[in-house]
Length: 127
Image (cartoon, rainbow, N blue to C red):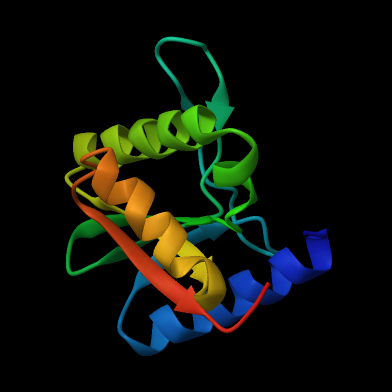
């Protein structure tokens, strides 16, 4: 996915969340602070949320997931989700994956197979 696609998705998701009452956004968008990095404990890999926000005192992390990671490296996808999930949990928050509708079943199956709890999925038309 190129940066313009990613930016377009983030702008749309931010607008949607803002309409729902979310605030304190951080994203790689002009005029906004960048979200902080999350370091995976075992490998030291760094994962960066695409967007973070607060709603009614709860911290929310959003990560765009195209489904490609699942096909090419299932273990890395799970490590990334677990790391982001643990970080969200440490902030008493929740992880949300932004997923194209066509990849929804694949992503949901992996989340369920690996007992990833407290992970939401925000479906979008396409990436």
